[in-house]
Length: 293
Image 1 (cartoon, rainbow, N blue to C red):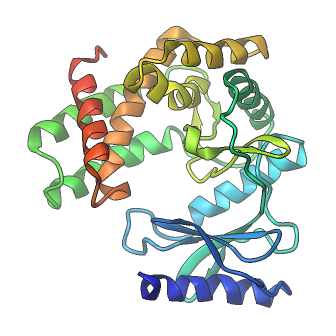
Image 2: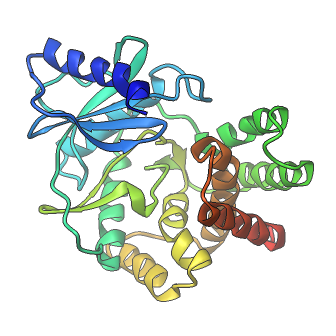
């Protein structure tokens, strides 16, 4: 396994050194399609290691960098890019990478009200972002991904038809609601409870869509998988109390769209899933089978 990540580690350390920061450690924080490394007291590198995956080039990181810079400069609760290295994204040894400020996580469960409040804070500031973002990108990308899944035999034909049906309908209906820049992948794993409060991270999937998409993303597991309606309701109520408007119809369709998107990406994100992950995928598909458009 170490041999597989030697080259991306070298890409990160050499790029940091070229910008005057000599790494004094190499702590692996995440090792998946993206490799996340802590290289110094303050420096974290993210390196795309899935060189044959559906996303190629640096446009994803470029959008992420632009949105993250905008939010951080306006005081949003986000993990900032590292100030000692130009934003990039950088290319070295065939890898795309960018660099972030290290934040200290605390082992305390995020407060539901704080989740809703911080997400609304980000949404309010995102409305002032003037950069170009694609419309409903993760949905249209997931629809295109179905061809690859079919070609590789990763889903049964009936499953592909189910996902296609819901994605096509979701793109049509969600495009009729007010659109604005979003996080795009606002699930709990992209929210860090730190010594300075809750911080959102990983803006790679940012796109134009209804705010209900991000809300559906953050409550999906609680509402659907765990049937923890109290937590989901607290997040939504805190978002409303912060000044946010939630259209129940848009939220309903966003929950369906989120299930379809996550199901489509499962073989890419988890090529060798554990029994627990297989069960979660099946529960999503079963739920989608009975979800009304």
